Length: 173
Length: 434
Image (cartoon, rainbow over all chains, first blue to last red; front, side, top):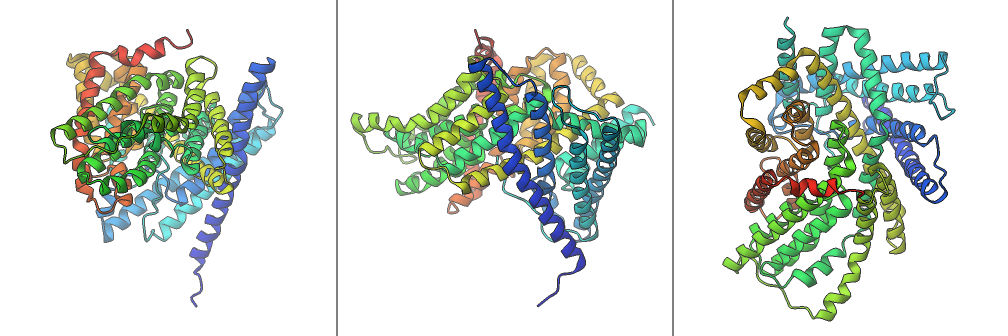
């Protein structure tokens, strides 16, 4: 029986966390979003009593859905990419292409992680909240930082251990 | 370094990264952020990246994206639109090439509730291809009609590509949906006419199907009810001014759940799968939007976009000339990129030119959607063709592509028709809510 190497173990833990985040984001927040907008429509048309905070809440729920699914979409290869030429590369060319992709993704994720942490701290310090909803903004910025940090780990891993196969999920659309 | 030169280098780097296989959204975001670091410095760029992510991620208009995707996937996984085939076959099966006509019409009906081309091909292909094989249909006509028919799903509302276009260009998604109805019907009719005429000229291509009695035809109509109910709820609500597109997405998703539950087809597995796939697609869209906004802002700052607009305006070829050039551009890009990739890459450059020339953004949204559909059936990356090849591996990929060519010609002909008569697109959205 072969023992998993530390990098594989780290990747596996990271992938499982991304999957868990994705499950929460989709099973909890998409239905919540659907219900919120649906209930708001019913309240507006049948009771003339729309929810004043529905736009604020909807926006934050949507942001959470996006952020929760982004790491899993990246890990499972759901992103749109042009594979026409990439799939024809081999050896060094493929390694360079992978490294460039990983570096690009890593630098962007680092930038987003840094900024999300800074923003979360500032939002906490100034107790920033939406106009019509009494919920602090900073937890959402923390989710953004966590999501970006997942991407950092993913791209860092890809930089160290180039992918043996192209993760390409079948497109849903 | 001159700003314009920096912009040109940015575009070259972006293309190189995309060709190297980097996810397109990330390539755009990387170039946009990298360029802005050079222009403004690291700290302001980081703030810009954070702000763009936050603002776009919490954009209320974008709520329609995950909800329409979820609705379409739920229709697909619960199979509530699969009954369409039986009804359409009983009405159209007797025509020359009846099964191919049925496939096209079913794809159009499927598109009216899913907006997913892949789902349409996967569902309709699995039902129709074995039947057509049994009836001796020519593989090119059989496969071409299903693969090309699938493209109708992204033109007939609700359309996912139109949501993305609407959010990006700040065009009303509701108007875009309504604008897609007449071109969608024209294209469906044109496909059906093509199949019928070809089968009449050469009956060996697509033999007629069996004759059904009026009783059988009329009783099959009830199978239209679930699809029709969902379509009328969503599109009727938008057209009547009752819902916004975002609200229609939520109501439509709830409606599909109710219909599926009533039909006894709502399972936890279908629900979970639909939610999960909707989440993944949403995550993919998210990075595309961020990347697109970042690179657009960078290009505007370098002056490349305004320079491009000025250059094209000074060419003196007018709106028609630009549209003809765009047809060529989209045909070429369609051979290299899929639908989403083509849309994201072109809009930052094309949209300012289109607006400068006074082309209606709603009309252009329909034009772009049809041109982008071509990417689904043109080699070497035509996604619909590969999906169909998975379902019917006995038909060679190149044979399917060849089967699609007549339909591609029809699509381009319809684009010319819409250019000649823009009111075919604009009449319905202009009469909305009246």
